Image (tube, rainbow, N blue to C red; front, side):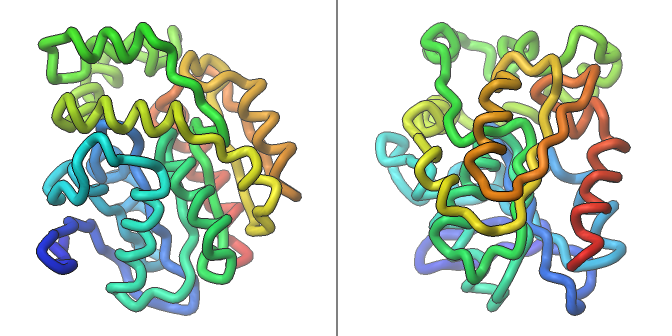
Length: 257
């Protein structure tokens, strides 16, 4: 674990594994979360290469970089770019969940020479956020994120798994979580997706209530050569519900690097 000082701001980053010829993996978390959602992936994939997972600005133990009203996907894109520049990392493979997938897509469009691969997990180029979700978050006093749990998991997911992970899925302050969801809803990455030539894989859950299969398929169709895998018995937390399948698919994706 490292804490980078970038000007008068800090960014906390899980940084594990060894540097080798393979481009480092950078795992980017979703709205309201932190790098903790990727802790199992960091441990697993760091045995073969360098793996990083930042707490995005305002999340986890990272400082707020901008007022919530100014939060955009482009702002988080620039934070990831700043992280890589600060650590002198020339090329990376980005793996992003939900909002993190949009950030990864934005990075690939902005810096094609720097992004060696993109994996979008439960994420699409365009993901409208239903007004009732924003209204519930605005009104709720439940800071644990339990109010969001029914939208996050497949009906077939074991309750023990849900209980074990739910407290890590939403850890940001309410104003940051709201800013994240508004940024996701405002982001239209479909035109960016058509410009992406970086090797891309999209992993989705068949039971995802946050991102429909139609949106996953449309995004895959917009990105030249993108792979699409929709996993059964998985919702929006596909990497937790079908972990082994996701890891195997990521192994296959990474084998050419």
